[in-house]
Length: 217
Ligand SMILES: [Zn+2]
Ligand SMILES: [Zn+2]
Image 1 (cartoon, protein in one colour):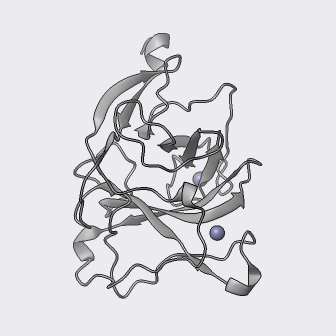
Image 2 (tube, protein in one colour; image 1 turned 180 degrees about the horizontal axis):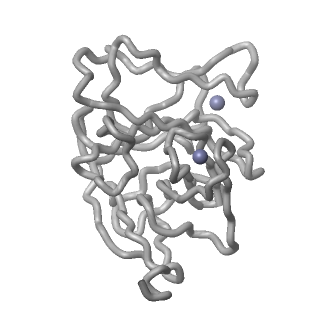
Image 3 (cartoon, rainbow, N blue to C red; image 1 turned 90 degrees about the vertical axis):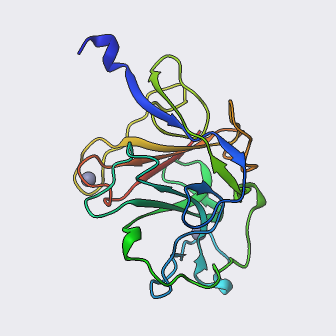
């Protein structure tokens, strides 16, 4: 591989467009495929009003392997579900943003679905997405020409070099998902991260279930 080729990474712009996706679809902001007998993820972060206790995460997006084979699905899983805790958290990077939780699921073992997704008692509107179907655009992303849209893979749209080490194994984490305030080709989903920036999710290349890093720029 040439030096220049190493500076090109595969990337997929999710390219959100208003739609009416179901739990069987990849989407942003639509219904999640969540089994009735699985506890819904909750955030017990210190960012919350202590009186309200643990708060449910909000289903932000889900991506099926058949649509996005580029994602690092662990063996036996075919669905990535991304949840946000939609109040301000101080992230480990020092910036503000929602808390993020990833669930890697085997959709073929889900039969009976949760009847109603729980809603948190308080939310920041700027972290809540509109409902969108996705029309992905695949491309090779050069380190010097980074797209600021919502995407899988690729490079991180920020000025300086930032690296995170996996707290479990020390491996250099890799950008897996970026959620964008503004879309270059699709429609904005009306969430905002930082100063009209991106929320970037980094995962461990050794094991995606190791703790993630979240960076808002
Ligand atoms: Zn929280
Ligand atoms: Zn690790």
